[in-house]
Image (tube, rainbow, N blue to C red):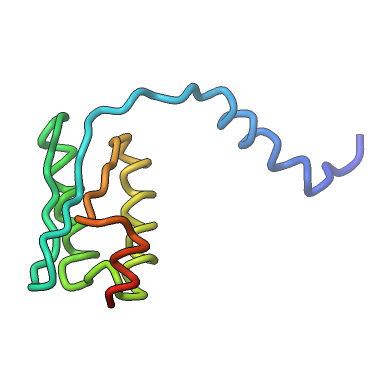
Length: 107
């Protein structure tokens, strides 16, 4: 019985991840673009417990408050919000006021 190859050490972690079944969402939130005057965003709770949604709202507004949708930083921060919602098991909806192609063409 020799040394265990390095690649074999990741197998137990992968096996644990595969055993976990997807959990149902605990709530739903909607991120709404308010327009060109800051603050640009509101986060509305559709359903779900306040102890999950309120901290999520705080983190989301911290990432987006001063960013309009046409700002390059918005795309990066939007992805962070999406990953955060996935971790918190929240269904996430976006209301940008217009299709993304139209909002970027105007700017």
